Image 1 (cartoon, one colour):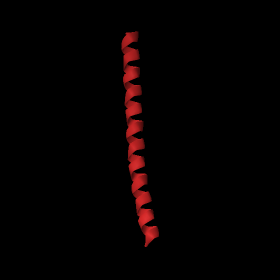
Image 2: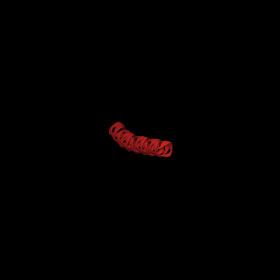
Image 3: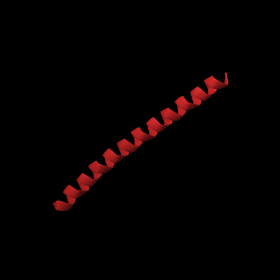
Image 4: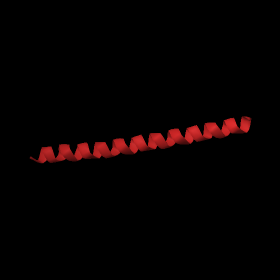
Length: 44
């Protein structure tokens, strides 16, 4: 029973880490697009 609980906690932790990484990657891509837009705007 305890083993199942520990396994469940590890699964939840892995899911959280994956989610955080996905969000960070998405934010990074959005930030890069914003920077490119600002850069192109500054050139004009």
